Image (cartoon, rainbow, N blue to C red; front, top):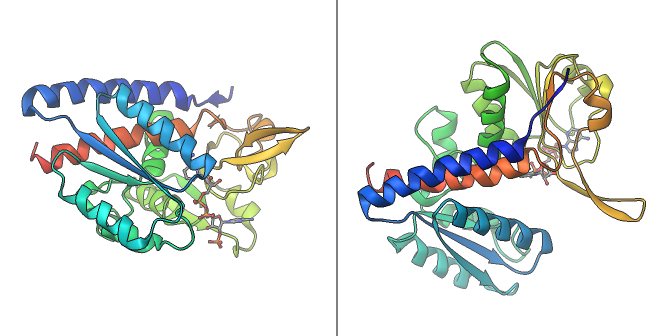
Length: 287
Ligand code: NDP
């Protein structure tokens, strides 16, 4: 029997737990953890993500503030806002929604955010801490994937894990977390030879590619746990549909457990952002 990992239900549980912890934090510290979300431009997908993040922040009892900037906002204007948010004691987490319009420098923006408030976990200081196994804010998507894996698999130690994709926001931190959990980790990417046979060896397969239905049944070891990070908006029979990187219909017939798209990794990413905001507030107040 293949388990369908319900990311939505698990995310609801996480947000409920964060809400309880936020209430206790408010009571004890007399401070409400604050999340500032910055959106530059009018990318429709980004606008939906920001709306969902704000909704979840409200459910978790966080104080969320949104900053909507025009698409022609200059680097200096964005830097100034980030600097203000860095200095604002009521803001414990800062999230600048990516991607940014082309004229803005993403790496510069990531480095401008105070590492203590970097709830996306993208700042080089947090990346370094993650890789060296020190206390760090962990990128939300891989953190959500690890929570799901830890619930499905009693002991990750010694498992063969394959991560498809090597981006800074998903693939690389995912591989670091799996390595820390004592998995034997292989990262594959667009230049990898023989990707199918490498994936077929995986007890854990994480797909973070951005190509709809890339992973087929033949790529998967029977009983493997499959985490599908991909979100691809594809037109099917005249209608827009969200598809993962994994061919769910095929792969679910042999996987041990699998995340659906939508309703898998996506909701977990947002729930982990709430957790990270609380964690950042706790660190900043020395709790
Ligand atoms: P990137 O485009 O930054 O990275 C994609 C990676 O996939 C690259 O490392 C690339 O290799 C690799 N790749 C591309 N084609 C192939 C192929 N045919 N075979 C093997 N590897 C390949 O994407 P992201 O990591 O940002 O995102 C990946 C997917 O996850 C997207 O669909 C995105 O929308 C989704 N996503 C979902 C989130 C969620 O909350 N569920 C959050 C973040 C992302 P190379 O490095 O060689 O180019």
